[in-house]
Length: 162
Image (cartoon, rainbow, N blue to C red; front, side, top):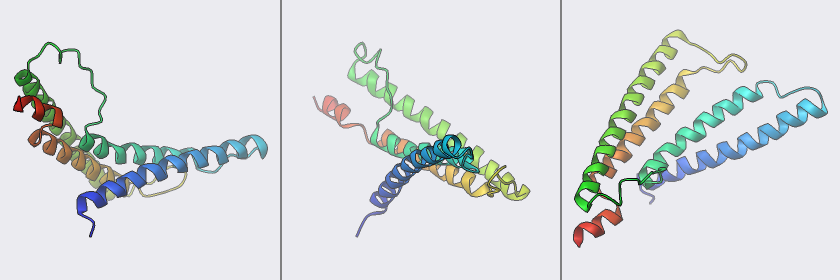
């Protein structure tokens, strides 16, 4: 049986991959329609924009959980192991606070969109499910950072053992 963590990892990975391939296919279809048939894909740019948002947001928990962030290590060489660990925990705390704040904001936005029944301009899709989906992904990002704050990376654990 697949654990829930593994299932979420696979789901998010396939969501990112499907969104990326879908954007490429829609872009090709839109450009071909525009230049060959003088008729762009109706709602193509709106659909590509939605796929882009979903792909980026589905990748955020994966990046956070795997600690694959872009990191600038200007001070790492000058800090001792203890100071690096303190700095890492401060950064994790800021990431937890920031992602939690964005999640709460997206939940409020989702509630607003649900109340007002707003729809997208061209495709006329209801928008609230997307806002709640993005809020759930920001919650997953916050959880990944909580796990990162509790469990030090392998390199930090090795240094502390020395």
